[in-house]
Length: 184
Image (cartoon, rainbow, N blue to C red; front, side, top):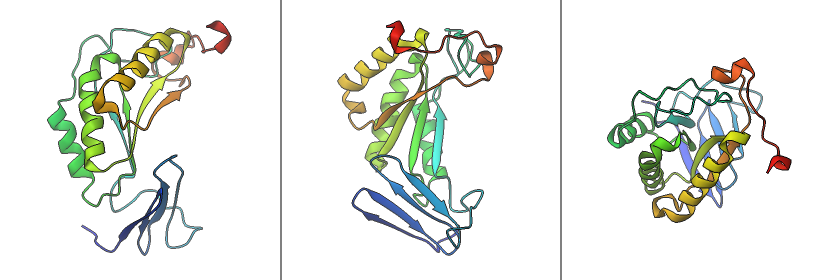
């Protein structure tokens, strides 16, 4: 494992510096810039470890929502909390991870809350939940916001990132309803 790097912090910024891979990351708003030996270099990946972890807590969802970019079913597997912790510890030995994004249906609320709490205790400040926004999801979004406001394990959740429709999975068929503020 490479050890020729330095991680430093200055205010809201985290800096990773090495001879051939570097980044600056704003811990507050997620601004991220990376480069290689010079600012003109753009490495395809970090040889030190991943910068971002996008973690799907559950593959179970009974919604069959036509706008969903996933193709989940009402049966499948949930991730165990111990498995999640093991993944984070194995992929992040150099503490290169800048942020974790969760994809979840509301069936994964418990593991989600425990995982966010674990990550914030682990020192990660950029812990986000990705949520597909459509007319059909607005009330589930309100439920998620209420959970974030009332569950103390989510007190350091950085953001709920609202995603627009991805044209894949069930949404590739085109039978979805794009959210409009006017429809509320």
